[in-house]
Length: 76
Figure 1 (tube, rainbow, N blue to C red):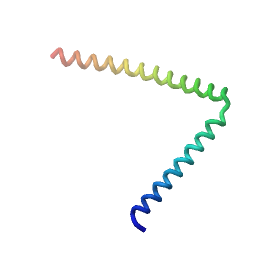
Figure 2: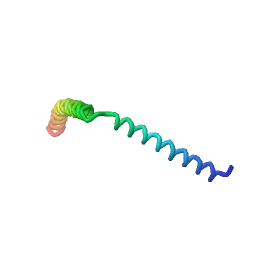
Figure 3: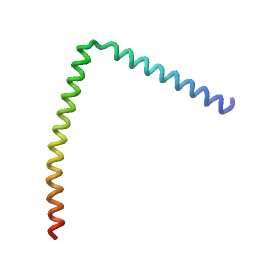
Figure 4: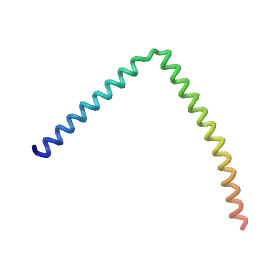
């Protein structure tokens, strides 16, 4: 077999595999009722809000430490 034939067959296999993945994802998405989708979105939002709050608290302490370091450097 020539290399271009192998490359073409690999490309075709990639297209088929991508199609299979897309179809599976679509089936899973359509299997949810609107209420289930709404519940999942609310849960994701609550999780993201909790993570943002935790990051904000951590960044404030980092900011305080950074300010203290900068003050110490500029005092010298």
